[in-house]
Length: 257
Image 1 (spheres, rainbow, N blue to C red):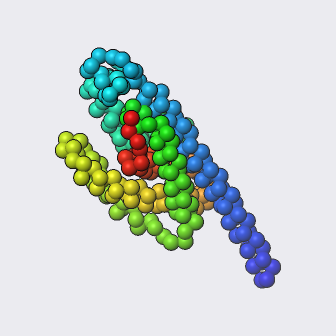
Image 2 (image 1 turned 120 degrees about the vertical axis):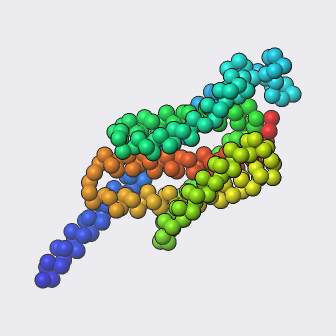
Image 3 (image 1 turned 90 degrees about the horizontal axis):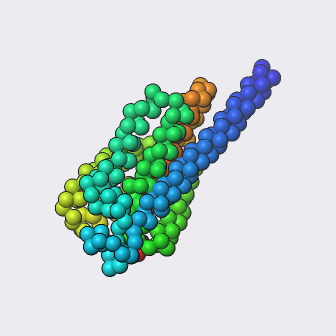
């Protein structure tokens, strides 16, 4: 009997070790995918955001000595701006609907395409804010994100209950932001920014813990295709948390041109 218990404990220990190693690999893949997505976003935003010159028709003027190029005008000052603005949101909903019907490779390609589209959507920041303030805000966001994600990964507290509340908050933020496009209220924008920062900070910790617990719950089934898609969805969620925190902090920390 004692020998059986010893053998059983050894097998359980081996299984737990395998899950730990698999979890580390899974989390590394999540952060790796997210990092590639961030690089694509930054590259697209920088490439498109540089569409300003120092001399152009008056209609293209956006500052004392800043003018849009023809392409910049088409993106930022024509009806095309609505397509650029809402395309990433549409792609997120489409991704959620498609994830179970496409392969892991297809999901990864879609994620990278979405990241590039997001870069185009936020490229206007390079025409509005100084490059130094953008870099500073990115570094502050990266530090805050790392701390929140680490806490979400290591905490013993179950924060899964935050999910529904935070998602409802995100929906409220989207609606309020759309309404404020037409109201242009600075007070409402400030409130949206403060509440949004708190919501996405909470989501960073929540999503990190969810990625971890989801892997542990399903690792024993050995479905590599499902785990690959799970890593991509996890990367997407953390990517969105980071981007939203960055954009909100930029409103507070960014120095305008």
